[in-house]
Image (cartoon, rainbow over all chains, first blue to last red; front, side, top):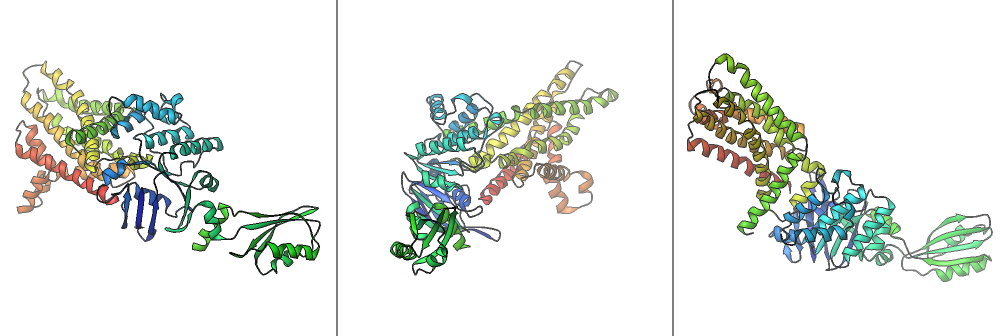
Length: 310
Length: 242
């Protein structure tokens, strides 16, 4: 549905994007992750046709953005980071303007606006002035704007930034609902959100893609899953003993109670160190309360990948 | 894109532009100031001259426009950039020309509405005695073209900056330079071909000939070319920003 081929963009001396390529399949929800200034917004602006890349090309539903930008733009609904609202307008007035500018059929205009407003939960504020809306409602109006022409593709730039936890859940649910039928790319800082909402995530840093895949796949590429070990009583030199095992990369105390000690043990890539750890514990006579393998969190993946590329 | 569709999109955007003026109190303040200042400056010497003519009104009008046109155009792009709506507009399936024409016509019709409201003056004067309508019609026509030229230039300048104050001052200076370029005291310093070029470029020269009631197609073509040129530059600025 979206094909990005080797796009680069430079602003003055700053290489914002460096040969980025990826594809997004129809009906897929792609999460875009990366630190501030990594190139997420630039990529989105290029896909939507707001900017042109210095190099490379973008195909939207098979249409070359450089050759037929207008047709390509018709397929896309875009919610920029700064929600594009005219504060002096009323919600209905704004949505009507968007619908007309998007060339919605005149006969169907009002019922269509109403149904879009309803799907974004805007019924209660439809007659209100936009400047009087809360941030959550502003975001909903922005989303209504983006889905007004029933686009196949939705590009959402940090749609939940600055919202309170309740509003975040509401917007996330709305994205999930919309994402069932459409191809969605959205960027976020909240990793749990990406994990919960996306089919696939892409981590970008310094204008390059540093990781890509399903969250759990990505975790495997970064490091083997860590082990969690809980021991009763004071085990003495446990850290040292565990650290000395050949398949172990590092050991950290994660919780130190009066009776229990909890450790996080990171094995080396591709090595199953469970047996060695169990033998080590038995050899030292530690009383094991819990020994489990934990999936690497997306936070960890993000931290490792962006650090590596720095 | 077919023709009716092309024009319909412009008209949707144009309506939004025009509504934006009247949705805020600034439009009313603007029109109020225009009418008060214009009438006051005109009426002050009117009774002293003891002449039933609006000639003097069309002498001061270009100077009032020098401030008013940049005040209209300064926010045209700056406001869209500030509120982020520029991203919405430039990712709509519309051409840059459609967007720029809509913005230009919005500003132009707003200026025209201000001018229409000032018609109360010639109407009132016509009751005072024999009144030559030719120069008045010419004057208003010239004012529309001159205003259009100022707006096109001001809009182009505002597309290059995010700062409204800079847009206002630069547009004011730009309009002033083009207005006086062909004035006698400027042309007097130069000579030969340059003087002829300056006379041709000067917005003021073309205005005064129309305001005398002489509507020459040469002047109209000049104004239309001037407007088209700066709108085209504006399109180029939008393209370059991509």
